[in-house]
Amino acid sequence: MDISGGTYVIVQHASYLKEQGYDIVMAVQSPFNEDTLKWHDKASLLNCLAFDEAKSLEFDLVVATWWKTAIHLHEFTAQHYGYFVQSIESKFYSKGQDLLVNYVDSTYKLPVNMVTEASWIKQHLEQKFGQHAALVKNGIRKDIYHASNEDDRTGFRVLVEGHFGVPFKNTALAVKLAKEANVEDIWVLTGSPIKWLPGVSKVYSQIPMSETAEIYRKCDVILKLSTVEGMFGPPLEMFHCGGTAIVFDVSGHDEYIVDDYNACVVKNKSIDDVRRLILELKANPDKLNRLKQGALTTASNWPDWDIASQHFTNWVERVLEQPVNNSVQSDIKSLNERHDKDFRNSDGQSFKSPSLVLFVKRVLHHMPRPIKSAFKYIEAILEVLSKKRVVR
Picture 1 (cartoon, rainbow, N blue to C red):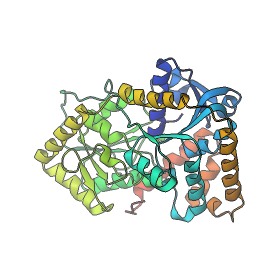
Picture 2 (picture 1 turned 90 degrees about the vertical axis):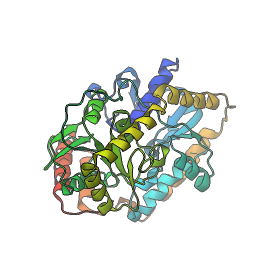
Picture 3 (picture 1 turned 60 degrees about the vertical axis):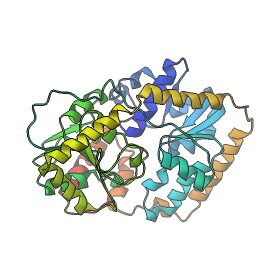
Picture 4 (picture 1 turned 180 degrees about the vertical axis):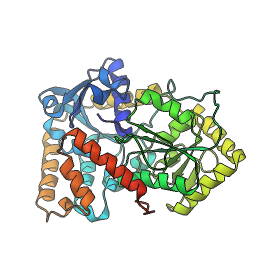
């Protein structure tokens, strides 16, 4: 239940379902407490249970929300099973982790009802796995994310958003490129536990969702250089708050981003083009304002979360209306256990860390939260100070 874009989407749909009268249980794998839930204004209203505790209950529908829950789906007793696929998560791992990539991909072969948030994921699931997933695009909290006429800011301000220590997010690289483009005012919005970064004017760490809009409204451009996304939300949130964006042509960007209309889209992961575009928007207020206006137009036409979650509820209702398949739980179990056995009986390739940093992170996973936070803080500073300019 920690801060993340994926958890945000899950909480939005779950809270809407609860408001419609559904009895919702959030089965949570990682430890959580009241403080963990504070970042989202509706998370604390949900019935959150530890994973193993939730397994003792019986459900009409159990929905896996990422691959690490999908491999345990058969451990829950339900009449129906679903899988909310927010990205092709095998893309999160490097080429040197082929066995792990195959293990993640095995979850997309499960005989369950699937729903996704982006057109490219729907196409991928159909073309590669023969799965016909429903498409429910994400909404936006228009009660929080909206533009303001009050702006006493001068100068050009860039916002870098994202977690540190996640290679495909390229958050530290974005900070470096903004610095290279001589941006004097760089802000960072992150879910990582950090308070300061070299060359950064302000760092906003693990703040409540309700406070993020005010940060967006005070910035001109969000610099978001992820190379793997489902349908990422921060640029869309920035659009609603009056800003524009610079992004790679990452999967899912085309759901709402149009190059040279509401944002700048960088092809081929070109670092030099990112730097050039930052300099161009900094020096050309006319282009900057034109993109901002296009972004506001896009925002005005985008549906809110009630509309999006109503579509998600329609999917839930269609699943519940299907005849009960008494063998589906055992079918899921058979497939999951077979793929798990294949993975664990492998030569151990996927468990070998390709770097000291990843090895330490695996050790820290079982450490107390303060120790993990301290490591992540140091890691973020080192990433920003590093002279490497490599897209991950």
